Length: 164
Length: 164
DNA sequence: GCCTCATTGTGAAGTATCATCACTACATGA
DNA sequence: TCATGTAGTGATGATACTTCACAATGAGGC
Image 1 (cartoon, rainbow over the protein chains, first blue to last red):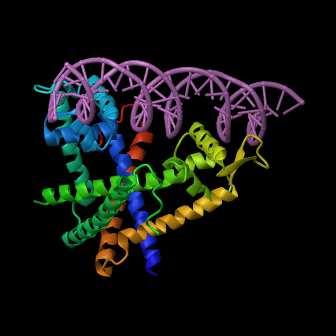
Image 2 (image 1 turned 180 degrees about the vertical axis):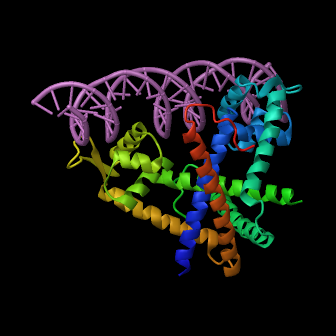
């Protein structure tokens, strides 16, 4: 019974994820950005000038990867690299004017996107949707948390299917 | 006011999309699949043996790209290529045993995932969530439809920002 | 039958993203 | 000053995907 309902709902969730990701990817591409680079800009906007290590931890990618992302963003004029004032190993990544403006524009683009999705929706339906969404998200986060914990417990061994 | 609510909700939607896509990507990787290849398997399961052209249209990618995807799936033993019985230009792509079994397993994996997201959720909340989700999806699809139409109207010229 | 044109699929080559390994330069604490 | 850890990078390669050119075939007009 509910199996069927769940499957349909999951289908919707999957389609939503696909469409949203596609839309985002395309809209970012118009600014010369990829998902990863936009994510980096976003974190930079939240944190202000940061070392690459901090960004690597924030994006949960390797240090080497951050170098590549920052290289690309420097080459396209979104951010600059400066030596860290106290730690001569580290570099500080900061916005250029262009980068800061782009980050703001991304925020505004999201606003527009939110309007597209929600504007004019009956309030009760919207609230209820958000409630459900929150719960689903909690469950997902919890699961990922658990997965990550299991991974770090026995890092190099085979994960040995714990969810059965 | 509602601006703030919308922005928060959009944040949730974006996070959901990210997490779901990550989870899917990882779970597919365990089967040696990428998103595109899994999508191809899925279409093949829906349609039965198909020419590459049909698959290309279904996935909305170029013919060249389908060749690559099918190459990979043949190399990993999920599908086979056979000459088309009547059109000697075309090839028919069909499941191997392994491919069919994997496609079934993907379906079951989705069932599990759906349970993770929804099982035990109060019925009222679930229904309401699905309603909202449906509306949001409709809006998204409509917009993509419009975008695609606008693109094909003036294909090679600059799209000339119609959404402002 | 022959000619033209459209369609199906592929080879070659290029680009972008990301991962791994080895390494330099620097920091830190004993 | 020495050992050890940390920040970042060069070299290299894997993978996904794109573009361009092209061979093989089908299909319709004459």
